Length: 236
Image (cartoon, rainbow, N blue to C red):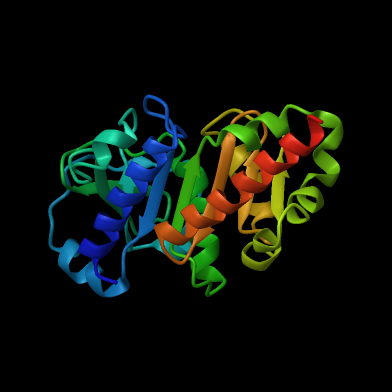
């Protein structure tokens, strides 16, 4: 998949998120690791920003380029013009700072620390996953407010329909409410991703990983349907 393919796919997924009402105002974010062979192209680009601290170290991403939704940008706008409402960043040699190299100098998502920590882990573990997606699906968030049921929530969701166990066999990890954009949220999410491909941020939303952005979306879509079925079954 080329960098252009990845950007087009991010635009498609942004539109789907908006249509499902999972991305109110500027809610949600996405980060895609660009192919290593694309780094040569972007390495020639001059910086559009000063070095910005990430807040943690990502040594396995040094020199790599990632597409990031812009902070404060709306998914419905990104769907029309991904490079006007997102940017491509380069991780600097210290592994602790980034610069923007394209297109406009829009600051990346406020959840960048979580996304980069995850991408760093995925590269280090030779994972095929190269996309991270965060959004706000209604029924999964609603379930996270039912604190007594959280311990068994993953098993309950897996049991709702065969497709969930087939396509999301590792279930869903759960992180208690933490400040959005915090390093603590990044660390706890990363711990859950050792065992799951989707993590519920309690009272906030979910984050999923996938080999590409569409696969990450599909994981959330399946798990959200299971959450809806679970809530319907409990309302009888």
